[in-house]
Image (cartoon, rainbow, N blue to C red; front, side, top):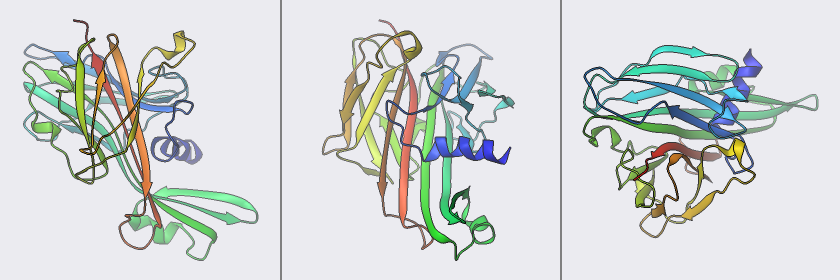
Length: 268
């Protein structure tokens, strides 16, 4: 069980999320709804094919949901199976919800009798669980965000305000207002500051049923912004990652940042 959890966390936080790697995602059953008491169901997984749960579940330990008024919202009916996690969300407020799994911790590797050991956890557990004199001890700080957005009724932006931690994407076009054939613009922040030169991979879902990923790669400009024109409707996955040495404290020598989001593009 420990090994299973560790593998899931590693995929979620540290494995490069390239076109050929496993993909980490949250997938809502709908992104735009209206009514007095709507609900959505959200799948969470790490998969080989985009939006098909066929590898391991994404753990929900660090699930954060922000309601349209900025307050925390609670997921209901959480469950984790062999291939996916799932939960329901009752949209009790009108406006836009931000749903995210936010991972912030340490990852360490070292060697014992020729075998590589791996550990992940928080700073408090590091001292007691990782041998400080271990051979070839390497510690990496990881900051990852996986998110999606759902709107009940009229969209708003209260829940979309950046936190200033890690990679975040500010949708200059509202995330629940994406349409095929139209251009959408985004601003990318790292620790709250615009990030230039950061490459994003954008892939439409349904990769299981086509021979090519048909991915699009865009790079942020000097303002940290990029634009994409959606070729057709569907669920899309955006991903990027970077590494730097802006660590907190002295435990880690490098920091790995990652970001992935699911957006729905509607037909005209």
